Image 1 (cartoon, rainbow, N blue to C red):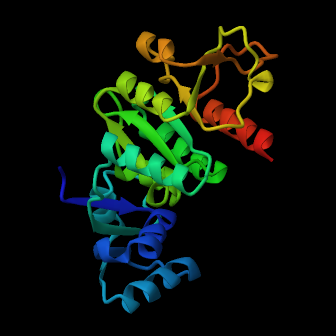
Image 2 (cartoon, rainbow, N blue to C red):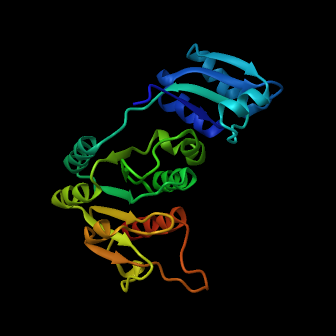
Length: 249
């Protein structure tokens, strides 16, 4: 497991400072950057005694692997990788507090931009956690955190060993799993999404794998009117999650 990570981008660094300032080891800011958003981050860093270095943009580009750092990077202690046991514990706590569990399952999403956007959507929809397989799936990378705009700090990401087994465990705990697939006969907007729920979305190109699909309680499709046959996974997951939000209201 990695012990340290690089986080970059104003929203991502701001989220770490807000939610886990103890994780920040040091920060770098771009020489010549002088704006209010960056100034507020520096004030928080000073409050926690975090070392801040000024560097040329080229140096920050290299540290961010040419990602869009917006003039600020932080070296942080890596977050604990959450697993099946952590997921089970969270669901038990939610049930104990009489909350309705609400999760997003991403089956084999490998594009960090898509995962980051899905985390951002999940945070906005009030999802309790995002579940991904440990293998053949992207985890929490600097790019994921940047695209997530702070959501990576507040939405738990569970990396599970066996996704099909985890889905069975969710069902045993009372969750209904709805998979999204374009060829499904059932309409998303006619599907009951109000109870304890996990929405399963497939990878960018292949959709849900066979075992994942077979592990769902039902399969639903998003009605499509145009000539495009499919949607980006982050867009599709946002539509599905917010349909659940609408029904729960």
